[in-house]
Length: 533
Image (cartoon, rainbow, N blue to C red; front, side):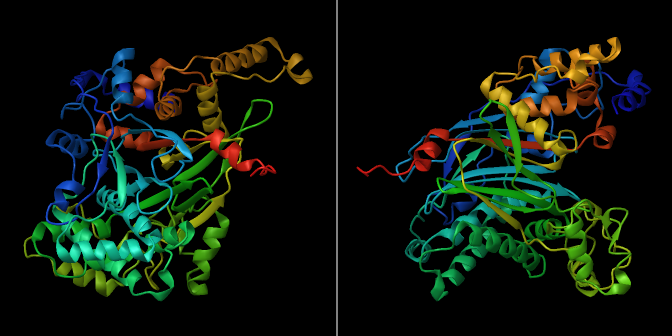
């Protein structure tokens, strides 16, 4: 693919020059304690400054001109790759309990302008564990943005026991500060929907009020139940918000954008008991396992919901009449249009034709659908909706001493790296040890050219890491590896120099979060109790 990228871009290189603006100063990820959800809640939900909002909307540090230069220096490449880095060390004991995650590292690299990926990370303050998510938007960034800032709240509220929910409701009724639900770990470039925050809080409150009225909710939901419920409830709220009258045109247009765009999601709940991964769509969670000999193995904790998953394809076909069996999945896409087979939003695959038309017809006269990034169309063979759902597939994994880290990433990473390769890269980055298998008898009989190729591959594996952040390390290798899986400065420079109208043709937005597990704590939990215990 590198040759195609190089040739197609070189043809246009004479009309481009590189203009790399100075980066926004790197700020540490800050912890957001939402201690109040009253009239000031909008400000607390939207803790980005104007500079970070500008970054989020434009997605990169390039000027608005289409700039291109293959002769990027290492400093320029590093500036681009590291501009969205995040690294957070977590206390082993936070005053409420022990943490199964001792550190996480995250990064994003956009191909779309603006970036359609989002990420989230937070500690549950009224229940156990931590929540991490990656979200891959399509048809625009609106749905991924809304899901990234709302979904973790829904999960956390669903796990809260009834006394905690009662305290939330009493505080809201009296206008007092509400006990914080989540402690967020945000990057300075993260944005929030400031103008919709009050709507989001109102619907979250309706959710916890319904839980309070449920007699079976006394102790709160288990993580598995909470994840399943939260995914479905948030998607239902997204659908509802696009249908009901709202207080102003901006809030209304945002709700429409969120409903008609879409987002996949992969969310992990981690505590000392284990990890639950809830996935809808084609993001992925992969566990890094260290074997006794020091080598690394990859254990997937999610399944992709796309046409390569034959079980998923059969599930969808079974939901529609036999006459649609050959049209539901066409060209490896849902109705020939959508690649992920589960997602948030995407109401054009869920609502009836009549509802879609009535919603769009209800918009203010003269409102431009293009200005809302709404390119409305009815998919072909749209006969028996809904064709799409958000129901997550949830996998539980009980942590073991050999489980060292978890990679959460959008499909932009997995398009370039296999599970085993990604785990090996992070594992060797973590340990600093690059294991090489002994030369096999068959390899000893290789011809000179083949032996040279083998040596190049081995040399590539032994190359020192250039990044302290493991997520950046993965992105660098995903885009910069050459024929022998060696890092190619020329290839990486070319991939990063692609102008806006070409970048998405050759790579996708990439978001990666790596969770480092507290192996000492896991080992202590795995030991059988002594007679003195």
